[in-house]
Image 1: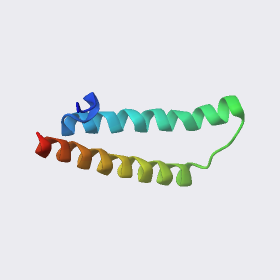
Image 2: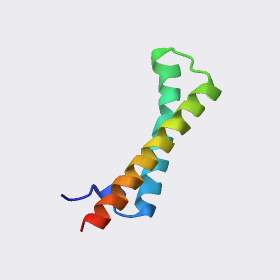
Image 3: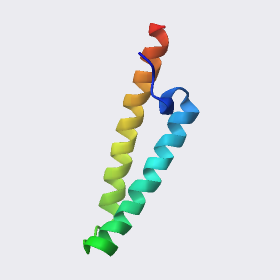
Image 4: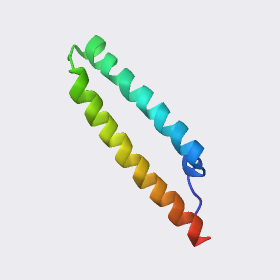
Length: 70
């Protein structure tokens, strides 16, 4: 099974997570401007950091497990 391109290296994983963080931060702006939903900054960032951290750990474990299987 081939690994997704984003998790072949730790650098790729880091770049992917930073890109998702930027998109997630801009979603807060979209919620405010287009939908009219004001999302408080602190809880939003804490949840986003938690989700991205969990995703990073899961993808890193998947990456290292697939390296040992080869």
